[in-house]
Length: 279
Length: 264
Image (cartoon, rainbow over all chains, first blue to last red; front, side, top):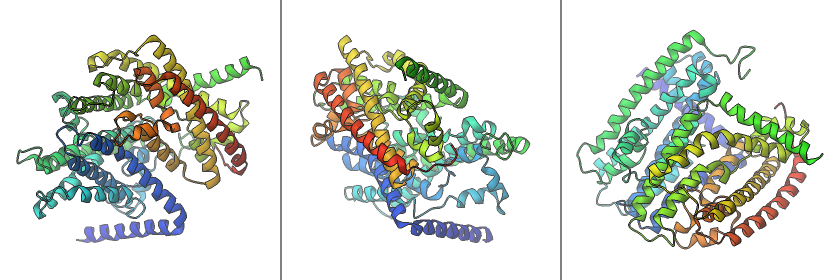
């Protein structure tokens, strides 16, 4: 209970700091937010336009594609809200030696990482875009939507975000071992996720598909959970596959991160040395 | 400055930049793998969609070639000098001190940054194209030659865009990060780099093809795949290059006086 209270206090603190950033210069915030909205709209527009042109994509109807795009945007939005300031791009923090700042804080590392990237106002654009798309698509999904389905939807959404975060931490942990080389490793990884998550993956060969659900589990960002939620995958366990994958990915990420921490305990960071690469 | 001396200076920058890719960015293999993955997903998507529908004059085979060549030449078809980052980190101050004009410096850095990717990603991707079920060959030898000319026009337009955005960034004191991302996002959609403009609904492609963004990626790819009139596409590219360079020059000369920079 004290842990939860502390978490809530920290979230409130970071939300307040974010709100201060928004109000400090509304003009700058508006430009930033508008820019973010343009990026989000541009990201989904290609798939949206294709779905309009071909009245859906393969076995996916137009409204199902819109739902998937909304779900994908909400996954991204959730991570942008909860894991800002390079928590999602953990390789940058580690590679730049900024992890020392986290170690200095009077709280456990997990708590610091879970809270200090919280920016619910400034980074809400992707989430709101996604929510809008899901609501738009839900007009055609009335037969599916009920309380149980909504609960499963939220559960899968959290699981999808966990998968992305875990993969990011898994690869980003390489920056413990190679700070300069792996500092930006999350960028191409997440860029690839951003591109691939927008398309239904039904047409891929078995080997590729298995690879996209295991080695690089981008299939769990939107395609697989939406497929399960919209009834494209009839098996009963389909709606539980993404949460299970999230647990497995999180375990792997924690193991990799701890291994990196172990290495870090011996080598430390070069940030504050005279010849540090960012010195 | 005579032309030979100028070219030599640019060549030195190109060589330094090309070498630095290997020294500073050794995780390039992972980046290349991610790019391969993306193109494989796109190819499979086209196969699913286009076997069931007509495609406005573009056959499935043509679109697969279009997608593959787009990825092979991704950096050349959406060229970036990263001048906004030089403004952001103050590196621009050092650039002004170097004995070469700014445009030549940034172009040389840009071309140098391509070398490694062309040799270790683009070429291998072209070679494995038949295994991906894609014919990577241009529609004719003439189309291949005109494609190269068209890519040069794309470079001119892309660099002009960069200097226009940089001038506006200097004036409005915006975020380099945001400007860079917005530029890439808009370019990807409007240039036909991700989805051929002919596949867009409501005849949008017919309108977008006249915009300067389409002269970046769509024009050279249409020339390569033989799905557009090369004379018209090249004329349009040259016209946009001239218009944008006049605009870029005026804006940059005007707004660079407002530039204040530390460090670099």
